[in-house]
Length: 188
Image (tube, rainbow, N blue to C red; front, side, top):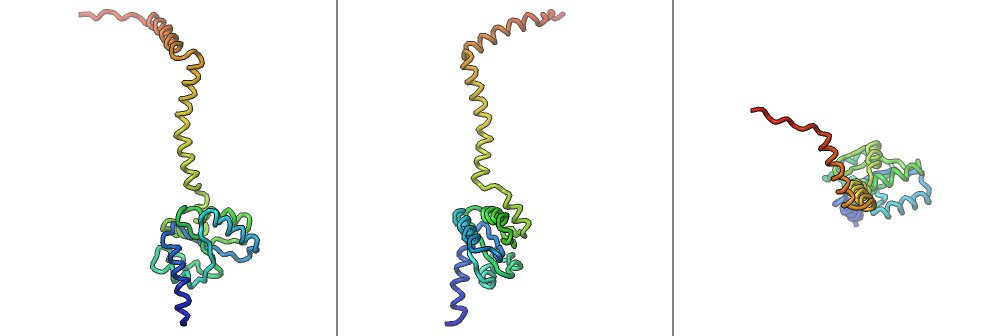
């Protein structure tokens, strides 16, 4: 069996992972302890991210002709790839958070929604909240005025309801009309 026949399934596996990927992040994992690597893999798995170590040549073959071809310059030294097809910012968020605890983990670069970023760009993307967090903030800001209105209406009801509010308004109305000067008849 030729070497190419042995390598082809690996290239196809990588291609299958990146086919529907929203983001791909490359990292240098040198210096991580087994415990740290296990924790990183667990966190990535819980976030729905595929994380694997492949040979750079295999990744290079899989990336050719795709949006991820821009990652070729980062394929030097030991490389691991984190791939997400559901949340575009998840790999960057999880890896950058973990890199704060394990400084040996080095982000090389990545592609997020078709745009290539270096390590600094990936760190900036990591600061973007997840889709769920953004939606909860949006719904919270939409709910705030409604909740305030409901509290005001509740306070009015506790003070005597609409009848008391109408009575107070009618009591104020004549006082205002008495204070207003009468209009002079228009001269013809």
